[in-house]
Length: 403
Image 1 (cartoon, rainbow, N blue to C red):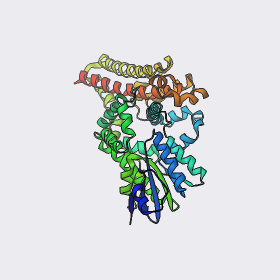
Image 2: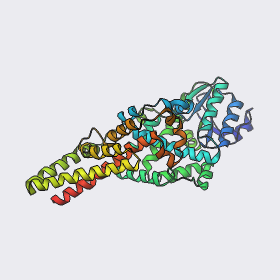
Image 3: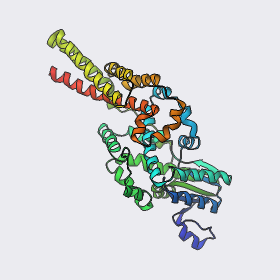
Image 4: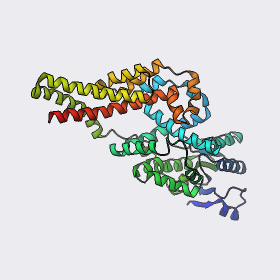
């Protein structure tokens, strides 16, 4: 049996310490769980977290963080230890770039409000240490979340989402005041999420709903009788709904399978390009074939080189993208950005100071392009994008000449 109530009603029947009215109280499995719904850039949320933990002196404090995000938040020098070459070789450059883009958005938002992003989580961690409460990292690993969100999107949805992010809140220099006000309102937060995810129902399911399940199960499993859970306000209703049932977490921790279409395109497009060039030899002779090869080399190379140049890559990096793209586009195991990123990282190797200034630099578009670390990631991403466009354009051109 589960009892769920707000603290306002709980105070009428229990000898409970004074708590903010927004706190949700859940009684389940002989545990008292108190949910603090927060906005990630709100001083009010920081105050409510501190008040709740000090008043309740809980056995356990659960925070909406996974181990990598907890490490990033508590070990500020981790950027200094990052091996950017290793990131590229392990093909994690785009994942890291995504994290930096999201971090930049929250940092700009926090700067407008005068609050460090994630300050309410840090307050929970600090208060838990002060009273020797057990700390539970209750969120699903961010890498799994992002891979599940991205992996289950179709090609058109992926393109639509990239455009939505880049043209909307992520790269806008000024955060709209109305949007800031809405994010600080618990009853508006779900509306804000709903607005973003309206065109992406699969995104909401994996970004919000699945994490509601994960958070709820971690709270059910948390040790102790009195537990304080610090979570984003938009997760409260989902946790309240999901916490009543014990749910296996295995299915929502699985990475999406490689789609058959992806495998077909990965091998099929290079095969089709080669087949068209070979077929062109029998149709138009050697000169015709050379012209098709020139189209492939120049269009693919030039567009990948333009991508590296837009990222402000070194001239040798641009040349490497130009030379690599026509070859890597025919090889599913390597990408143009892999080559150009390694060249950029070798020529313009980031210093310790570059890593130290990264969190501040990414708060603006200019800083994002200026910092050598983020510039390497942009080189990887934009070289790959240019090569992908080049493959489509040159392949279509060759096909048009042939048919």
